[in-house]
Image 1 (cartoon, rainbow, N blue to C red):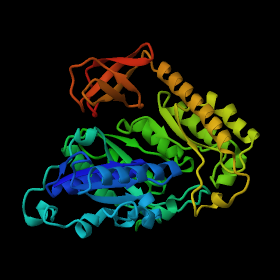
Image 2: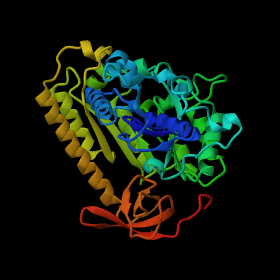
Image 3: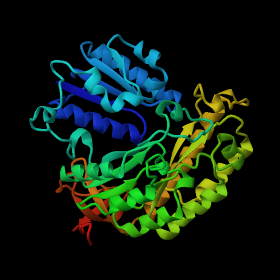
Image 4: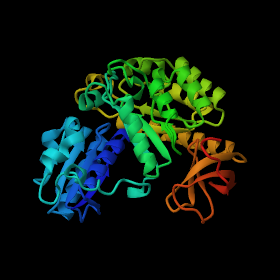
Length: 426
């Protein structure tokens, strides 16, 4: 049985796709192009109308190019608009997010896709290893669901209430992928900062991070996106002291206008956010800090937008993801008045993206002359450093090798001279 998995959207979706892929490989599945696969899983996103459109186009293309394929549509768009997605092609079967972890058992058990080999007493199939589907780091989902009520966000509807995996199961995941050869693990969740609040007894994200820090094995960790109110001083201090958790944060601001933050139902102010990212840089001067920004939220005035222009260029942020506001039926923002004209939204998005480019350039230039630890990607000539720089090095190494790179510049590119790596115990 040949399979293909196409994933849209967030790291949580990518973590879910990794789980599905592990299950397919355990059943003897072989990765193939979507045009040649027997089963194609499309893991959709619905954070914007553009994400919905991309999923629709992909499903239609697969149905056209590979009419004999069984197409499984899952993820947030498939959950939010089940009938609409099912109507894209007779070959489509919709699997809601809640059914995603176990759908292979109930939906796809046929002659060429049966039980796991391990369930029959045989070998466990071919495990995921570095390089499969171009992956070098492994993403584990610690938590899914969200109970926040941001005015623009449909995800609490498509993902449901917060649900956390146990610390024991996550430690087992890390040990398993470390044994398979992965040297970097990304810990992710829909609302990662709420980790453990639903467990009995309750625990916390900081406790989970400390437990993962104690896992044996040659593996480093990145923490995925954290809401600003969840990135506590204790977490910043832990990352600064750990040695295994990398200095890379993603802290979505969404807007620099306090009036807009209140309208968006974001539970912090710009002053709080400013103090947070300044504290990160004070403890970790070489850290990268990414952020999400929404432009064109209903009611956004020129003065509101100007707050972004005033704060962002001088902030310590190192890269931006800019999202033009998109109406999501079922959210509070959909019924808000004073919608911003599309041409204004596009112009404002372009201006913030220009700022993001300048921030990224400034960060890259600040790292010239430093020596950073990293991991080789692709064909071994690209390194992602601990603080999320992409640095080119000369040929000679394979993928998934730890290195230290002396960073210098050649034109617009960052180049590096590889140095002997230190072990994680150094």
